[in-house]
Image 1: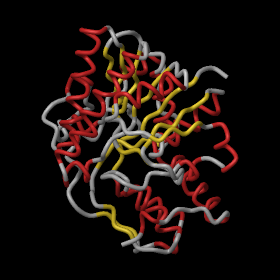
Image 2: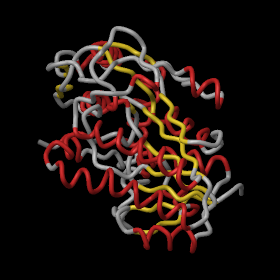
Image 3: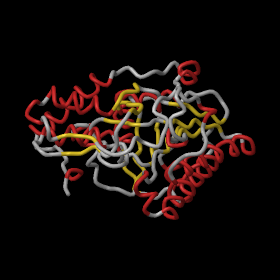
Length: 321
């Protein structure tokens, strides 16, 4: 076993895949989350795998609870994934700020008081504005089109202050459209939910069109693992996958599941986020790059959905009206 890693928000999609990656590496993951039901973890893991996971119920805005969990579990690393996604921040911006900004400040303070040298945290490509017509680099962040993007940008700047004033290193990772089993909520969950709906014979409409940067959740988790070894400083990295039109997902679903033809579609405006991320910085610093093409990632997702359906464990709450 390498180390104990506390993961906030580990009951989410990215968290579930990171827990899986930690277990595969021989680490001891500690799930720190308000949610107690491991429903997303069980979309990614087998029930027996949970025996290697420690669960601590807690809120990221509880500074003392975070510090206590880090110290009691003797955590050697911290990955912060907890947060409210775009629709929830839009519906209640003050609550979004409390969870996403205040919560992140509490994580950094707890890490500093517990003597950790680094925090790895989820930022987002939502820090970028609309498509500038070229791949966006980390320094291009600005003019986000959502409260969520503004909150993530604030977290990056607060991480810089923690480094400059307290010497606490960090690595913030910016994915865009993460997909795969367990991705069941948020603005960019539509492609994953559409594939599940098609398998189950249900209609589904992805609520955006145009290009976006697709990244399978397994590749995203590998990026967060790599960031645990980032150089000192307040680092920020794009997680670039493959930039493709969301219409390609619909076409792939119809080819893989011909019976779904005409039942899955996409409509609406393109996402208000630059659709292509430059991934050069994380490749240079950490040697990380995505390994799965969109087609391969969708194939693996469909295979897993079929396995879960056969086992009677395929979650469908995200498809209910």
